[in-house]
Length: 334
Image 1 (cartoon, rainbow, N blue to C red):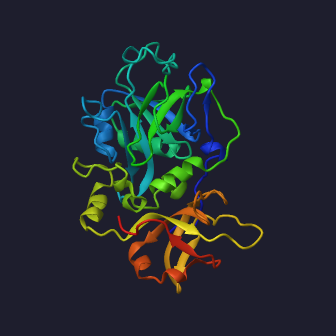
Image 2: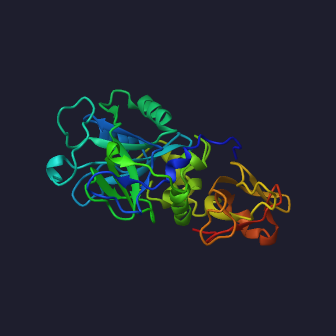
Image 3: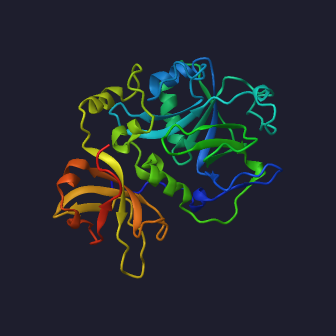
Protein backbone atom coordinates (compact mmCIF):
# COMPACT_ATOMS: atom_id res chain seq x y z
CA UNK A 1 0.00 0.00 0.00
CA UNK A 2 1.33 3.45 -0.92
CA UNK A 3 2.25 6.02 1.69
CA UNK A 4 2.43 9.19 -0.40
CA UNK A 5 -0.58 11.47 -0.19
CA UNK A 6 -2.55 12.27 -3.38
CA UNK A 7 -3.22 15.84 -4.37
CA UNK A 8 -6.02 17.21 -2.22
CA UNK A 9 -8.83 19.52 -3.24
CA UNK A 10 -9.25 22.92 -1.54
CA UNK A 11 -11.09 23.03 1.76
CA UNK A 12 -14.09 24.81 0.19
CA UNK A 13 -15.13 21.67 -1.70
CA UNK A 14 -17.84 21.00 0.87
CA UNK A 15 -19.25 24.54 0.97
CA UNK A 16 -22.98 25.12 0.49
CA UNK A 17 -23.83 27.27 -2.55
CA UNK A 18 -26.71 29.61 -3.34
CA UNK A 19 -28.16 30.97 -6.55
CA UNK A 20 -27.72 34.73 -6.94
CA UNK A 21 -30.59 35.05 -9.43
CA UNK A 22 -34.33 34.69 -8.90
CA UNK A 23 -34.26 30.90 -8.44
CA UNK A 24 -32.77 30.12 -5.02
CA UNK A 25 -31.09 26.76 -4.59
CA UNK A 26 -32.12 24.69 -1.56
CA UNK A 27 -29.82 24.44 1.43
CA UNK A 28 -29.05 20.78 0.67
CA UNK A 29 -27.04 21.77 -2.43
CA UNK A 30 -23.26 21.42 -2.03
CA UNK A 31 -20.81 23.00 -4.46
CA UNK A 32 -18.01 20.87 -5.88
CA UNK A 33 -15.40 23.30 -7.26
CA UNK A 34 -12.74 20.57 -7.46
CA UNK A 35 -14.26 19.27 -10.71
CA UNK A 36 -13.20 19.89 -14.33
CA UNK A 37 -15.82 19.76 -17.09
CA UNK A 38 -15.26 18.94 -20.75
CA UNK A 39 -17.38 18.60 -23.88
CA UNK A 40 -16.76 15.37 -25.80
CA UNK A 41 -17.63 15.37 -29.49
CA UNK A 42 -16.91 13.18 -32.51
CA UNK A 43 -18.64 10.36 -34.32
CA UNK A 44 -16.74 7.63 -32.44
CA UNK A 45 -17.07 8.93 -28.88
CA UNK A 46 -19.61 6.33 -27.66
CA UNK A 47 -17.84 3.38 -29.28
CA UNK A 48 -14.47 4.61 -28.00
CA UNK A 49 -15.68 5.07 -24.41
CA UNK A 50 -17.38 1.68 -24.56
CA UNK A 51 -14.10 0.07 -25.62
CA UNK A 52 -11.90 1.80 -23.03
CA UNK A 53 -13.97 2.65 -19.92
CA UNK A 54 -15.59 0.28 -17.42
CA UNK A 55 -19.17 1.37 -18.16
CA UNK A 56 -21.46 0.39 -21.05
CA UNK A 57 -21.89 3.17 -23.60
CA UNK A 58 -23.46 1.09 -26.38
CA UNK A 59 -26.99 2.31 -25.53
CA UNK A 60 -26.05 5.54 -23.73
CA UNK A 61 -28.81 8.11 -24.12
CA UNK A 62 -31.33 5.66 -25.58
CA UNK A 63 -34.93 5.68 -24.39
CA UNK A 64 -35.19 4.25 -20.90
CA UNK A 65 -31.43 4.48 -20.29
CA UNK A 66 -29.82 6.84 -17.73
CA UNK A 67 -28.31 10.02 -19.15
CA UNK A 68 -25.56 10.18 -16.51
CA UNK A 69 -23.20 7.25 -15.87
CA UNK A 70 -20.32 6.70 -13.46
CA UNK A 71 -17.25 4.94 -14.84
CA UNK A 72 -13.53 4.44 -14.35
CA UNK A 73 -10.41 4.37 -16.47
CA UNK A 74 -8.09 1.49 -15.54
CA UNK A 75 -4.62 0.36 -16.45
CA UNK A 76 -4.27 -2.96 -18.31
CA UNK A 77 -3.40 -4.45 -14.90
CA UNK A 78 -6.74 -3.31 -13.47
CA UNK A 79 -5.43 -0.41 -11.36
CA UNK A 80 -7.50 2.79 -11.20
CA UNK A 81 -6.19 5.78 -13.17
CA UNK A 82 -9.25 7.83 -12.23
CA UNK A 83 -13.04 7.87 -12.08
CA UNK A 84 -15.45 10.09 -14.00
CA UNK A 85 -19.05 10.94 -14.75
CA UNK A 86 -20.32 11.15 -18.31
CA UNK A 87 -23.60 12.90 -19.05
CA UNK A 88 -25.74 13.50 -22.10
CA UNK A 89 -27.38 16.92 -21.56
CA UNK A 90 -30.61 17.68 -23.32
CA UNK A 91 -30.70 20.55 -25.80
CA UNK A 92 -32.20 23.92 -24.94
CA UNK A 93 -35.25 22.99 -27.03
CA UNK A 94 -35.98 20.09 -24.69
CA UNK A 95 -35.77 22.31 -21.60
CA UNK A 96 -37.14 25.73 -22.60
CA UNK A 97 -37.74 26.84 -19.00
CA UNK A 98 -34.06 26.52 -18.01
CA UNK A 99 -31.65 29.47 -17.69
CA UNK A 100 -29.56 30.74 -20.57
CA UNK A 101 -27.02 28.08 -21.44
CA UNK A 102 -23.32 28.93 -21.42
CA UNK A 103 -21.87 28.68 -24.91
CA UNK A 104 -20.33 25.41 -25.91
CA UNK A 105 -16.68 26.13 -26.80
CA UNK A 106 -16.13 26.99 -30.46
CA UNK A 107 -19.74 26.21 -31.36
CA UNK A 108 -22.35 28.87 -32.14
CA UNK A 109 -25.22 26.37 -31.69
CA UNK A 110 -26.24 24.12 -28.82
CA UNK A 111 -25.35 20.65 -30.12
CA UNK A 112 -27.48 17.66 -29.20
CA UNK A 113 -25.56 14.47 -28.59
CA UNK A 114 -22.21 15.73 -27.28
CA UNK A 115 -21.12 14.26 -23.96
CA UNK A 116 -20.46 16.20 -20.76
CA UNK A 117 -17.36 14.76 -19.08
CA UNK A 118 -17.10 15.45 -15.34
CA UNK A 119 -13.56 14.77 -14.05
CA UNK A 120 -11.72 15.30 -10.76
CA UNK A 121 -9.66 18.44 -11.29
CA UNK A 122 -6.50 16.92 -9.82
CA UNK A 123 -6.65 13.94 -12.23
CA UNK A 124 -8.14 15.56 -15.34
CA UNK A 125 -4.85 16.00 -17.20
CA UNK A 126 -3.75 12.44 -16.52
CA UNK A 127 -7.11 10.91 -17.48
CA UNK A 128 -7.28 12.85 -20.75
CA UNK A 129 -3.67 11.97 -21.58
CA UNK A 130 -4.38 8.24 -21.13
CA UNK A 131 -7.59 8.49 -23.17
CA UNK A 132 -5.67 10.19 -25.97
CA UNK A 133 -3.09 7.39 -25.98
CA UNK A 134 -5.85 4.87 -26.62
CA UNK A 135 -7.70 7.01 -29.15
CA UNK A 136 -5.60 6.08 -32.21
CA UNK A 137 -7.72 7.09 -35.23
CA UNK A 138 -11.04 7.32 -33.40
CA UNK A 139 -12.94 10.55 -34.04
CA UNK A 140 -13.13 11.89 -30.49
CA UNK A 141 -12.40 15.46 -29.39
CA UNK A 142 -12.31 17.13 -25.97
CA UNK A 143 -12.85 20.82 -25.16
CA UNK A 144 -12.89 22.38 -21.70
CA UNK A 145 -16.19 23.81 -20.54
CA UNK A 146 -15.38 26.58 -18.05
CA UNK A 147 -18.90 28.04 -17.94
CA UNK A 148 -20.47 25.35 -15.76
CA UNK A 149 -20.09 24.21 -12.18
CA UNK A 150 -21.07 20.98 -10.43
CA UNK A 151 -23.36 20.68 -7.42
CA UNK A 152 -24.49 17.71 -5.36
CA UNK A 153 -28.05 17.81 -4.07
CA UNK A 154 -30.88 15.69 -2.72
CA UNK A 155 -33.36 17.02 -5.29
CA UNK A 156 -32.57 18.70 -8.64
CA UNK A 157 -32.65 22.52 -8.35
CA UNK A 158 -34.97 24.43 -10.67
CA UNK A 159 -33.33 25.94 -13.72
CA UNK A 160 -30.36 23.57 -13.85
CA UNK A 161 -28.69 23.28 -17.24
CA UNK A 162 -28.45 19.53 -16.67
CA UNK A 163 -29.31 17.39 -13.64
CA UNK A 164 -29.51 13.64 -13.17
CA UNK A 165 -29.46 11.09 -10.35
CA UNK A 166 -25.95 10.27 -9.16
CA UNK A 167 -25.48 6.61 -10.15
CA UNK A 168 -23.70 5.86 -6.87
CA UNK A 169 -26.14 4.63 -4.19
CA UNK A 170 -26.96 7.18 -1.51
CA UNK A 171 -25.43 10.19 -3.28
CA UNK A 172 -28.57 12.00 -4.46
CA UNK A 173 -28.35 14.07 -7.64
CA UNK A 174 -25.66 15.92 -9.59
CA UNK A 175 -26.62 19.29 -11.08
CA UNK A 176 -24.74 21.46 -13.55
CA UNK A 177 -25.36 25.20 -13.46
CA UNK A 178 -23.63 28.35 -14.78
CA UNK A 179 -20.88 29.31 -12.36
CA UNK A 180 -21.41 33.06 -12.80
CA UNK A 181 -24.78 32.78 -11.07
CA UNK A 182 -23.39 31.21 -7.93
CA UNK A 183 -21.51 32.47 -4.88
CA UNK A 184 -19.71 30.57 -2.13
CA UNK A 185 -20.53 31.76 1.41
CA UNK A 186 -18.42 30.74 4.36
CA UNK A 187 -19.48 27.26 5.46
CA UNK A 188 -18.12 24.31 7.37
CA UNK A 189 -15.88 21.99 5.35
CA UNK A 190 -16.51 18.29 5.27
CA UNK A 191 -20.22 18.24 4.32
CA UNK A 192 -19.81 16.36 1.06
CA UNK A 193 -17.12 14.04 2.42
CA UNK A 194 -19.41 13.20 5.35
CA UNK A 195 -22.12 12.28 2.84
CA UNK A 196 -19.65 10.07 0.98
CA UNK A 197 -18.51 8.39 4.16
CA UNK A 198 -22.09 7.69 5.25
CA UNK A 199 -22.78 6.09 1.86
CA UNK A 200 -19.42 4.23 1.88
CA UNK A 201 -18.32 5.91 -1.34
CA UNK A 202 -14.55 6.30 -1.76
CA UNK A 203 -13.28 9.10 -3.99
CA UNK A 204 -10.29 7.82 -5.98
CA UNK A 205 -8.93 11.38 -6.29
CA UNK A 206 -8.73 11.66 -2.47
CA UNK A 207 -8.59 8.06 -1.31
CA UNK A 208 -6.08 6.55 -3.74
CA UNK A 209 -2.91 7.36 -5.63
CA UNK A 210 -3.10 7.01 -9.42
CA UNK A 211 -2.62 3.42 -10.59
CA UNK A 212 -2.14 2.07 -7.06
CA UNK A 213 -5.42 0.32 -6.20
CA UNK A 214 -7.58 -2.20 -8.02
CA UNK A 215 -11.09 -1.09 -8.94
CA UNK A 216 -12.74 -3.55 -6.55
CA UNK A 217 -10.56 -2.37 -3.66
CA UNK A 218 -12.17 1.06 -4.08
CA UNK A 219 -15.68 -0.50 -4.19
CA UNK A 220 -16.26 0.62 -7.78
CA UNK A 221 -18.18 -2.55 -8.56
CA UNK A 222 -20.60 -1.65 -5.74
CA UNK A 223 -21.02 1.94 -7.00
CA UNK A 224 -22.46 1.21 -10.47
CA UNK A 225 -19.13 2.03 -12.13
CA UNK A 226 -18.49 -1.35 -13.82
CA UNK A 227 -20.63 -3.28 -16.26
CA UNK A 228 -19.42 -6.88 -16.12
CA UNK A 229 -21.87 -7.94 -18.85
CA UNK A 230 -20.47 -5.70 -21.58
CA UNK A 231 -17.55 -6.54 -23.81
CA UNK A 232 -13.90 -5.74 -23.17
CA UNK A 233 -12.53 -2.61 -21.54
CA UNK A 234 -9.04 -1.73 -20.46
CA UNK A 235 -8.25 -3.79 -17.35
CA UNK A 236 -11.28 -6.03 -17.86
CA UNK A 237 -9.47 -9.37 -17.59
CA UNK A 238 -8.00 -8.72 -14.15
CA UNK A 239 -11.12 -6.98 -12.83
CA UNK A 240 -13.48 -9.74 -13.99
CA UNK A 241 -11.22 -12.46 -12.60
CA UNK A 242 -11.18 -10.80 -9.17
CA UNK A 243 -14.96 -10.51 -9.23
CA UNK A 244 -15.50 -14.12 -10.31
CA UNK A 245 -13.46 -15.45 -7.39
CA UNK A 246 -16.41 -14.51 -5.20
CA UNK A 247 -14.52 -13.34 -2.11
CA UNK A 248 -12.61 -10.08 -2.39
CA UNK A 249 -9.89 -9.79 0.23
CA UNK A 250 -9.39 -6.00 0.22
CA UNK A 251 -12.13 -3.36 0.34
CA UNK A 252 -12.67 0.27 1.30
CA UNK A 253 -14.53 0.75 4.56
CA UNK A 254 -15.51 3.58 6.88
CA UNK A 255 -13.79 3.52 10.27
CA UNK A 256 -13.79 5.67 13.37
CA UNK A 257 -10.52 6.67 15.02
CA UNK A 258 -10.34 7.60 18.68
CA UNK A 259 -9.54 11.30 19.21
CA UNK A 260 -5.91 12.16 19.82
CA UNK A 261 -5.56 12.91 23.55
CA UNK A 262 -2.82 15.44 22.79
CA UNK A 263 -3.35 19.13 22.07
CA UNK A 264 -3.30 18.62 18.29
CA UNK A 265 -6.29 16.28 17.89
CA UNK A 266 -5.60 16.19 14.16
CA UNK A 267 -6.78 13.45 11.86
CA UNK A 268 -4.33 10.77 10.74
CA UNK A 269 -2.17 11.28 7.66
CA UNK A 270 -2.89 9.57 4.37
CA UNK A 271 -1.39 6.10 4.50
CA UNK A 272 -1.42 5.79 8.31
CA UNK A 273 -1.30 2.04 8.91
CA UNK A 274 -3.72 0.05 11.02
CA UNK A 275 -2.39 -2.86 13.10
CA UNK A 276 -3.62 -5.57 15.45
CA UNK A 277 -1.01 -7.39 17.52
CA UNK A 278 1.72 -6.47 15.03
CA UNK A 279 -0.22 -7.61 11.92
CA UNK A 280 -1.06 -4.91 9.37
CA UNK A 281 -4.79 -4.76 8.61
CA UNK A 282 -4.91 -1.80 6.24
CA UNK A 283 -4.34 1.92 6.00
CA UNK A 284 -6.19 5.21 6.33
CA UNK A 285 -6.87 7.14 3.14
CA UNK A 286 -8.83 10.30 4.01
CA UNK A 287 -10.47 11.61 7.15
CA UNK A 288 -13.12 14.13 8.04
CA UNK A 289 -11.98 17.31 9.81
CA UNK A 290 -11.68 16.83 13.59
CA UNK A 291 -14.99 17.36 15.33
CA UNK A 292 -16.97 16.76 12.13
CA UNK A 293 -18.28 13.37 13.08
CA UNK A 294 -22.03 13.82 13.33
CA UNK A 295 -23.25 11.35 15.92
CA UNK A 296 -19.83 9.71 16.13
CA UNK A 297 -17.40 10.62 18.90
CA UNK A 298 -14.15 10.05 17.03
CA UNK A 299 -12.72 10.94 13.63
CA UNK A 300 -14.32 9.20 10.69
CA UNK A 301 -12.10 8.05 7.84
CA UNK A 302 -12.06 5.93 4.70
CA UNK A 303 -9.64 3.01 5.05
CA UNK A 304 -8.57 0.27 2.65
CA UNK A 305 -8.46 -2.91 4.73
CA UNK A 306 -7.87 -6.65 4.47
CA UNK A 307 -11.28 -8.14 5.28
CA UNK A 308 -9.94 -11.55 6.31
CA UNK A 309 -7.37 -10.13 8.71
CA UNK A 310 -9.86 -7.67 10.20
CA UNK A 311 -12.39 -10.45 10.79
CA UNK A 312 -9.82 -12.48 12.75
CA UNK A 313 -8.42 -9.57 14.79
CA UNK A 314 -9.35 -8.78 18.39
CA UNK A 315 -11.42 -5.53 18.08
CA UNK A 316 -9.80 -4.17 21.23
CA UNK A 317 -6.33 -4.47 19.67
CA UNK A 318 -7.01 -2.66 16.36
CA UNK A 319 -5.00 0.55 16.47
CA UNK A 320 -2.96 3.04 14.48
CA UNK A 321 0.80 3.06 14.96
CA UNK A 322 0.39 6.04 17.33
CA UNK A 323 -1.82 3.95 19.61
CA UNK A 324 -5.24 5.39 18.76
CA UNK A 325 -8.00 2.80 18.65
CA UNK A 326 -9.79 2.14 15.35
CA UNK A 327 -13.22 0.59 15.00
CA UNK A 328 -15.27 -0.35 11.96
CA UNK A 329 -18.45 1.56 11.15
CA UNK A 330 -21.02 -0.64 9.46
CA UNK A 331 -20.71 -4.20 8.17
CA UNK A 332 -17.39 -5.79 7.31
CA UNK A 333 -18.66 -7.85 4.37
CA UNK A 334 -20.46 -6.45 1.34
